[in-house]
Amino acid sequence: MTNPEKENGRYDLHMHSTSSDGMNTPSELVGLAAGRGLAGIALTDHDTVAGVGEAAEAAARAGLDFVPGVEISTRAGSRDIHMLGYFFDPADARLRQRLAGLRDVRDVRNDRILERLRELGVDITLAEVKDRGGRPLQPGESVGRPHMADVLVRKGYAVDLRDAFDKYLAEGAAAYVSPPRVSPVEAAAWIREAGGVPVLAHPGLYGDDALVRQVLAEAKPAGIEVRHPDHDPAAEKRYRRLAAEYGLLTTAGSDYHGIRQGKVFHGELGGYTVEETRVAALRAAASAPKSG
Image (tube, rainbow, N blue to C red):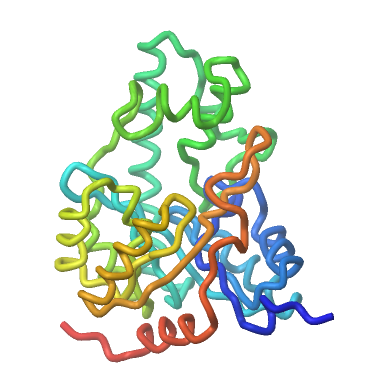
C-alpha cells in the first residue's frame, strides 16, 4: 500500500530540535518524518544551525529531502518577530557568527527573566534551565523559555507549559523580558547574504496585521508562513490574501517542539505541510540573483 503523503511530496517546513527548544534530537525528528510518510523537512531551530548537520545526514540515510533552516529572533515595533530562513549555506562563517551574537542576547534575556522570577518569589536557576531535564546544553545550541517552563512545572510553580507561559513567560506576562534585537530587515539580509531565502514566520501570533504589513514592506521576505497550528481558518485565509497582495510564496509548518507534560507544542509533526512544488519555488528564490 502506497503512502499518499510520500507520493504527493509533502514537506513540513518548521520544527525544532534539542539544539534549541525542541524535545527530539535532529535524528529523531527525521525518523518521525519518515514514519509519517513525508518527502522532506526543514529544521528551523532558534538562532542556531547546530543541529543541521546531524539532520541532513539522518535525512540522507532515510531517503528524505532535507532543507537547511533557521528561525531568527528579531524585534519590530513592540513585538518579537521571527524570520525563517531556508536553503542558505549552514557553514557560512558570517551567518554563524551573527547567530552566535543572537544567542548572547538570549543569554542576557534569560538572566533578566530569572531575575524577575526571583523578584516574584519563584526560585529557579540558570543551571536548572540549562540542564534541560538531564541533557545539558551543548556548544552552539540555544536555551529558551520552554526550558524555563519545564523547570517551573517540575518545581510546582505552574500546572503545565501553558500555565507557565500565561503566568510568567509569554509576552506581557509577569516575568517577560525582550532585550534589544536585530530588526526583521537585518535578519532577512543575513539569510540572503548566506545564499538563502527569508520567510516571515506565523504572522498570526503577532496580533498586529499593520505591523505585519510593515515588516513585509521593509524586510521584503520571499514568503509568508500561512498554515500554522496557531492560525485558525480565518487567519489562514487572511494571510493567503496578504501573500497574493505582496506577491509572496506561501509556506506551512507544524512548529513542532515535541511533547511536554503530555502535550504537543505547537502542532504535530507533519500536520501542516506544503507540496514539493512550493519547496522548489523556495529553492529557486534562494538561487535567484540578489539585488541591492
